[in-house]
Length: 102
Image (cartoon, rainbow, N blue to C red; front, side, top):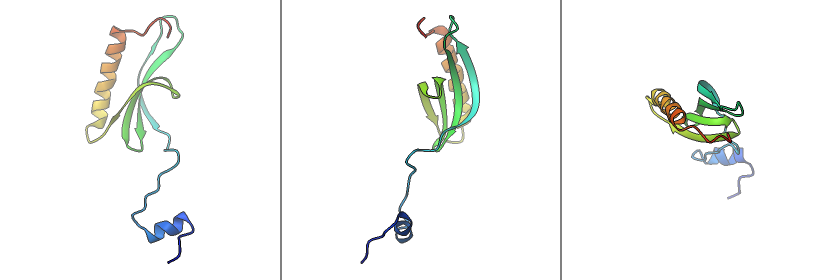
């Protein structure tokens, strides 16, 4: 038996083989729920919904590279649940604003 010499050849001989990208696809922005700017005008916190390879995800973030929190959502009610979470997150931030340093 000879060894497969390429990934294509390996997949042809093993249909169960699954290959994953070295870097998952970038999430696709769907909606911006809200933005809150600091009292001093420094940073802006954004709450946005994304479509990812695994379903939907909500992020509270300063920018794409500075995510404060994220939560995945799956299933038929994912969009509705994501919207409810966005409202809850905004209420939490308004009632407990981050420190003055943000």
